[in-house]
Length: 317
Image 1 (cartoon, rainbow, N blue to C red):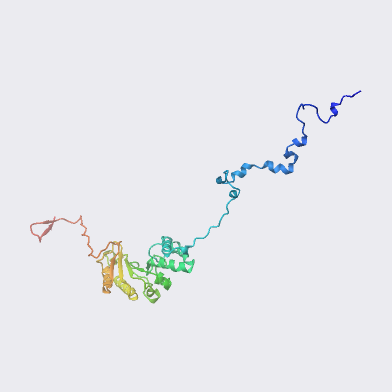
Image 2 (cartoon, rainbow, N blue to C red; image 1 turned 180 degrees about the horizontal axis):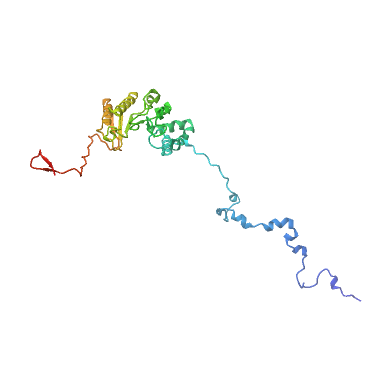
């Protein structure tokens, strides 16, 4: 008697399968749960974070891997100033010393305006020669200090404090008259220590008059016998004796100073006696022509005069 084959014992299903072959649970388990130590960091990794760090030019289809790398940062190289032509370097010096003022004098404000600018002279020997010559050749120096402070009565003016090479670079000096008109400082003396003999490149001296004690306004306060006029003439004469190569004298003054005054006439005589050329400053507005005296002011409170037909007889009304 034949026994029917037991379908439960067969290794294969006969005929068409009723459903998909079941898969082991180990194969259907997610990788992060099956291997937590290996795939935990990959599960937390976000690709968008890395893409946001890329430059916009790298987000193209044709971008290569080498273009995605960040370029190396190059260190800035110093600019070689001495490679410029000398004409351009002089222009740079002009911009550098632009706010140092006009006439150089002993002034408490020199440290803020000038001293810090002169630090460029400590760069190298080439810049020292060029910048120092540019600075001193474009700034006139006052022979005697006039600042109303501790420098006014000093025995060592700025010109005497400068080096001989610095004085040799000067092209203009200023002699200011007026301060101390009643009692000039003792330091206003022309001597070898002043260093005028080193100023070999100076061809022009500006004589600036702040006030003329010969004016009627100073009557009763000035010293007698035209003391300050004689002092000013002697001072200018001594300066010109130390510098016989000077060619021009420029006169400048405040508005209350007249060309016809005793002080100005004496100074003009000194210059003309040496055959020097006279220049007139723009601030005062003088010219080579004679100064026009303004008409006398009318006194409105004076009594009126009436003419009775005779030009020699005038009767007050």
